[in-house]
Length: 189
Picture 1: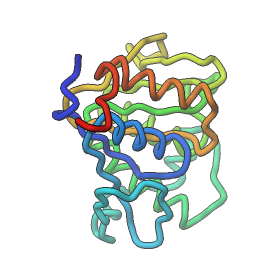
Picture 2: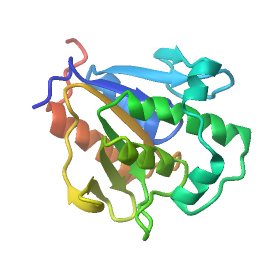
Picture 3: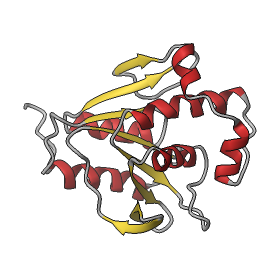
Picture 4: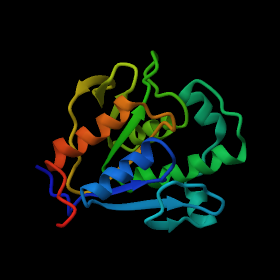
């Protein structure tokens, strides 16, 4: 069983999967750090660390590389660039990335979540994705997705995912916390 007092959730606090990870961290009394930047709309705002322009620049990458790596383009310009820049910090500060979304047939993950997953692969982080269509967890192992039942490590971990979280996605996050830490502590202690 993982020591919840050693674990630390790192996310962007966005609506959907990231906020659900945050609610579960709060329920299990796991420290939660939300990375943000000027103009960022977030749902979770407990312990917030504001990234400076210099911090964001560390995560800057050519949008062409993002498009090529994911096999698709995004049309939100500056907004998506900020998300991509901040995702660099979310991923690099955690030892393992947990994501909720949809694994595409070519092996990438749909949407902006896919960039976080690709960064985690690039930086040799552990990667676990709950595929909402298949309703199952998968780990990136030996260059492919393999079914798994992941657990949260007793150190910093990152979380990201779709804004369109389904009931099965919410349940998968809760079950991940239960599998990792046991039942949630009662409200009194």
